[in-house]
Picture 1 (spheres, rainbow, N blue to C red):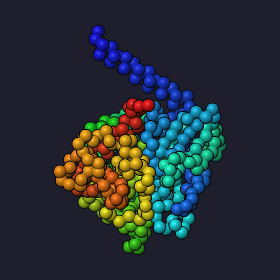
Picture 2: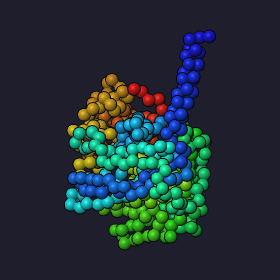
Picture 3: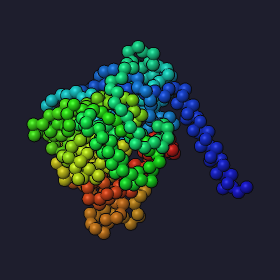
Picture 4: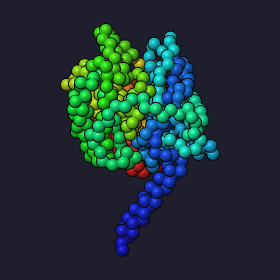
Length: 434
């Protein structure tokens, strides 16, 4: 028996034992149903608070049963679940539309409240939930909210907020071992559900036409939630168009024509209550150009515009893997979204403050930093100035990428790597390096 063969046997046994330990950890502390925690985020540009709104027990936890603690330091917020012995049991990072709004001019003079929901596997014993905000000036975490949760609490609701049909478009295995994508119908009436099913299937094809998703097709389950709307299409406030729809999606978010969002995050989670999901993606029944994507919040875009195939992977990249916008010439409502003295958390942006933690390892030794924005570096992983809505001080990995423009159909190597790592995490395949 060769050394390499012995090593392979050892590695296989270690993997099996490791999976068993992780599974045991999950089933010791959680069951396979899902707990939804409804919250209200409120405040303005200077301060914010979190308020408790309710608890809901839902049929199935769709996330990993092995990678319970997220290994990435992503998001403007994170939430953590602790046992009564102060053991960290579960964590996830996330961002929100509320955070984005806090960077706008309106938030300088007005306070607002935004509904938000987070999900976790249902605990078997009492736990403590804590929510943290990332402090923009220091990049450190500060606790915003804490509450105890007991699974026997009689105020945990178990009613069905909606009973929409859920179609299985693609099924490759148990949700705990796959990336589960739930497409939500928005602005589709009961008579338009056949169109929604066709649109969802088309968007699934869009996803797997792009790498790394094409290679990892077998790591995905795709679901389509037939959320019925009373009227067809979304709100377009600046054109005086208002519709009664399931998710209340609207253009003109932050007074930007193309920014299409569904501000009530809790409503989206209610629509998907009977679906296992890792990521929610809203298909909006419109030919008007627009979309949005927020990390561990949702992705959303139009169904019928000629550029739908190009916009979808971009917004999915935001929502699924926390990829940042690499463009810097389009109109946005944000004021100084990035602090140039702090390294952005997004894996594909840098201010060079702590570049060693980003993609330095993917650079050729002869690639200059910053990298000239010239055709000679068109196919080079580099450090190109311009990204994150500003032309100065924020850098991106490639001249062009799916996160920069609609001109290219692929993700750059840095974004590709980040997407693969996220797929591996949700499938329980990620090797966490200490």
